[in-house]
Image (tube, rainbow, N blue to C red):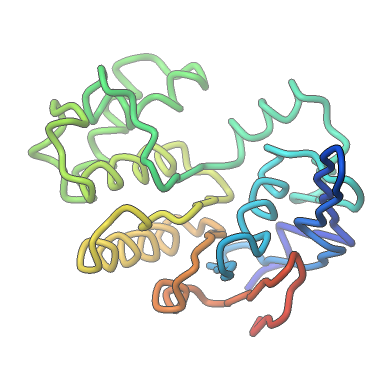
Length: 228
């Protein structure tokens, strides 16, 4: 593995209500190398999705530091964070988050449109990515015309088409049957290895976590085991 691309130091996230304070993430420190495939595993409420959201810059930490490369994302303005994510990070969600009115190729090209690629070029790149994922016959299909597994392939294509340095995935197979889930995990692993992308994904399932190079187990907001 190369030098760390993600460095987290003493990261804490506290949610406050009128009567309680909950430490969703409690003084977590870790480093993830460039090109590493890493799973964060824990039960519901363990803090795993909160940790992913903090690393993504989607939530602000209560305390601690998050560095991606040389950039301190915990200290960035909201507009700088949006630009940083657009240029460096791809996302895959449990619920696919595709645009229902767009075709598969338009969905896959969406990030490229946001980055200012000309229409012809971004659609060409999207078609090539989708075809490589076995969706060459479904380029013009809209999400409702695709199975769950096909929709998640489109979502992965969208996340990877701009060649981000980091891919973050939150329960990427949570809505899929076991056979399709295994296919999607194999596709994710193959795709990030091919592109030399760092993968960080959250799951409650140790069987899915086994697709990673490294497994980090979290409980009550703290890392309890790390085989890295």
